Every structure is written in C-alpha cells, then in structure tokens.
Length: 92
Image (spheres, rainbow, N blue to C red):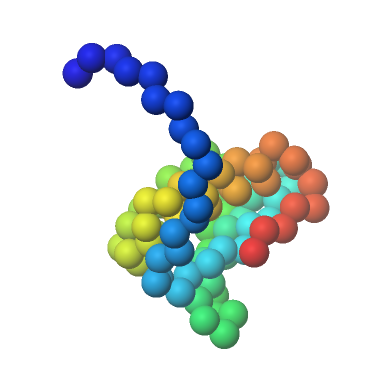
C-alpha cells in the first residue's frame, strides 16, 4: 500500500447502543482506576493499575461488550488523560 496523507476534518461522534460508560479516577502515584458502568449506575467491572495495563484490559472487555471502536478509542484517550494530569481527575 502506498503512503498517503489524509487531511482529517471534524466529524461528529456516533454513539453506540451498548449502554456502557466509564468512571476514571487517578488514584495514586501512577495508578488509574476505570469502573465500567451500565444503566442506573451499576458497576459491571473495575480495573486498576498503570494506565497502559488498564487500557489493554478495558479494551479487551469492551470488545465483548460490543462497544464501537470509536467509543473504545475515546475511553483509551480518557485513560491517557487521567495518567497525564496525575491529579483528582474524574471522567464519567
């Protein structure tokens, strides 16, 4: 495949119908926690560890929960942000 530069314009977000969302906390030195939630604030699964490890576990789980690639990519981005900010960061 030949190299090609593609200029990307803004695109809207397409929500999937998984009914899942995450709550992400930076807990202590280098550790993030990601709670995967469903309707009515029910926690389905929680992962805690270094950002790079948590991201891999969460993506594997989301694959089985039928989360769209776009939604999974967003969650990975938010985990990275929690790791970079290293403070009282909470995403939900």
